[in-house]
Image 1 (spheres, one colour):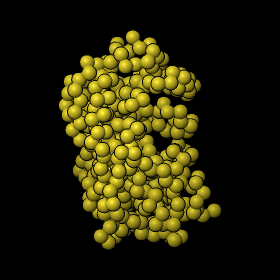
Image 2: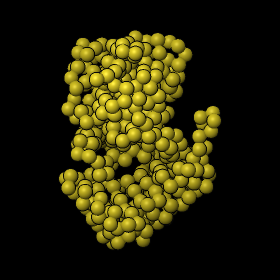
Image 3: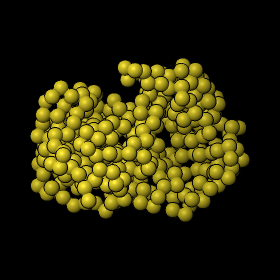
Image 4: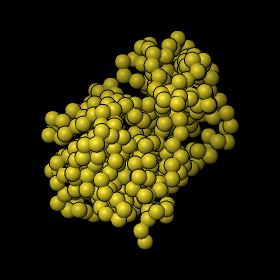
Length: 374
């Protein structure tokens, strides 16, 4: 694909925009299409915890560490922004052995992981009520967070100012090509066709359905998620908290971002594809946030964003060109925040140079073995 000049990117989240910006920087002519507005999908409801400490395979760990590196570079170039920070992470569990095992596994990979006594937490991790903690907790000083809506807006601005063409409200897009032929463009939900030398599908949880129309099965385990944002308050928290009942981080404007998994059976999708959630969930999560914060400030939920989180069937990212549909690249991953910048960079590099990047080799779509040419 060396010399590619026209690329169509489908998906207006962090992966789609990151890829589009990198392609534009590399000299390509880029068209970005999104079903509704930019950032309206999974990027708008992600806790966006930047980490590599979840017991990942070695290749996945290395890719996530590269992802964190790109965010550190971004922060170094934009000091003082309120939507990106590296102030560490704090983790605890009801089972102390779970915490110890997590620490040991992280340490084996060279990840910065430290066991901390409960009484030492206030000095190391401000804003947490030590009374809610078990005797020992796990601190990861190198972790951080990003507000993806803020990052997406920044990328969209660079994309449009740099000459990229953005089409919002394009509906459900499909790839023109397939059935043994290479991708040659994109068709919008209202029937307009745009030619392209390469197509990138970064449609979040909708990616397997778009790929499926090309006769390629991409195993999908996407599941429900919901992010809640608080009203402004004085909370003093700087780190990301991961606890048995809540995941919590600072959010721009003196707010908090909150999520977890215990309430997801009370988040439902209506027949018209809109979403609803039990109001009691929001009150319970706000109360839990108040309980774990120093001083127990009143936390009020200001907004909530439910929907599907993209998750490949084996939990690992899917990046690369479809072998059955040449010229069509896929970017499909649960870790869209941590991999948002590096994923876009590497996919764009493959399209612009025609060379497969070694960091993406373990994450190729053909690893699933369904519907691929031999």
